[in-house]
Length: 206
Image 1 (cartoon, rainbow, N blue to C red):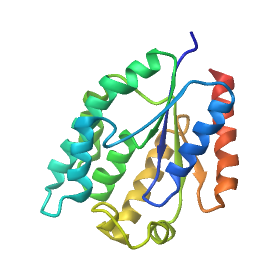
Image 2 (image 1 turned 90 degrees about the horizontal axis):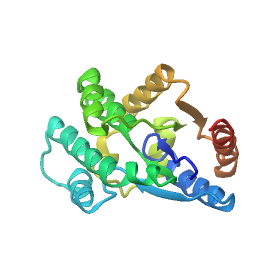
Image 3 (image 1 turned 180 degrees about the horizontal axis):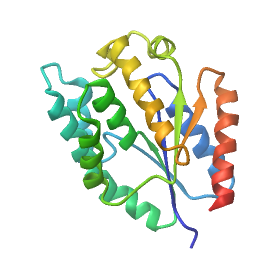
Image 4 (image 1 turned 120 degrees about the vertical axis):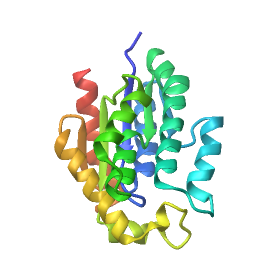
C-alpha cells in the first residue's frame, strides 16, 4: 500500500490557499493518487461547533479561550480523521494546522509562542506535516481580497494581520525544510505552477 502523506496549506486570510488546495487536489487525483481534503477548525461534527464559536461568536472571547478551542478541535481532528487517512495510504490536504495557531494566537494575539508550540505537541500527539505550503502576500493585499463580509478573525484589523504575517515568515525561517514559501501576489495560475513544482518534488522524494 502506498504511504500516506500529510500536506498543510497556510497563510493569512485572503492569501488564496484554499483555491490552491482545491487545484492541488484535482492535480493529484488526475495523477491517480487517493486524496482527501480537510480543514481546521471545523472538519468534524465537534469541530463545526467550535468553528462557529471561533468565527461568528458576537460576544467577548478571551485570547486563552480562543487558543484552547483551536487546540481541542485539532486534537479531535488528528485522532479521528488525519491519522486514519494517512494510515490508509491517502494524501491528506489540510487547510490550516498548527502553524496557523502559532501565527494567529502567538504573533497576532501576543500569546506565549513557546507555550503554544508545547500545547500543540500535546494536541497533535506526534503528528507532523510532510510538507507545509505557506502562501505569502502582503496584509494590505490579503485584506482587499477578503472583501467587506469578514468573520471575527478576518475583522481583527490590519496591524493584527501584519503581525500574523510576520509570524508565518518567522516560522518559515525556522523550518525551511518543511515550510515552503510561495509568492501568492501572482496570478492564481502562476501560484499554482509554483505550488505544483513543490508538490512534485515531494512526491519524487517519498
